[in-house]
Every structure is written in structure tokens, then in C-alpha cells.
Length: 83
Image 1: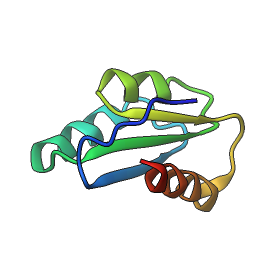
Image 2: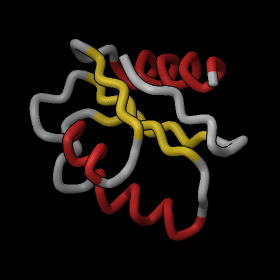
Image 3: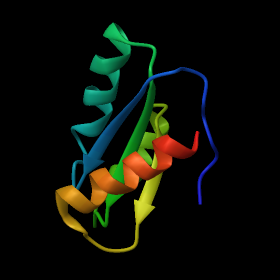
């Protein structure tokens, strides 16, 4: 699935659906103010959201289909509790 980060006691979870073209700048903005781990939950996007998030330095969890905002957040929470 994904590698565990655990570099920082804080994790920022970003649920994302078809956010190519925007996700990298969001991650860059967060990096300016925080050194927290960033986890992007790609909620079944049909575009290059996951690739752009990885290139921007986030850990990406890719869901096989769209679960919606709540499902993506819950996935991120479950991941964060494991690290």
C-alpha cells in the first residue's frame, strides 16, 4: 500500500478528488508553514492528482474508487493512527 512516514508527531491529511493542477501548490503552501507529514488520500481521481502529490513530496494513499469526503478522511485517520 504505502510506506509509513512517522517523522513528525503531526500528520496533515488531505482528501483529494481530481485536484491535478492544484494539489502541488496546496502542498507547497503547507510546507511553508509546517514540517508536519502530509498524507494525500487520492479518492479515486481520474486525473494525475496522485502523481502530482507524490512529486510535491506527500505520501499518497490511492483509493480504487471514489468513497467521498468522509471515506477519504476516515482512510487518512486510520493511516495516521498506525504510524
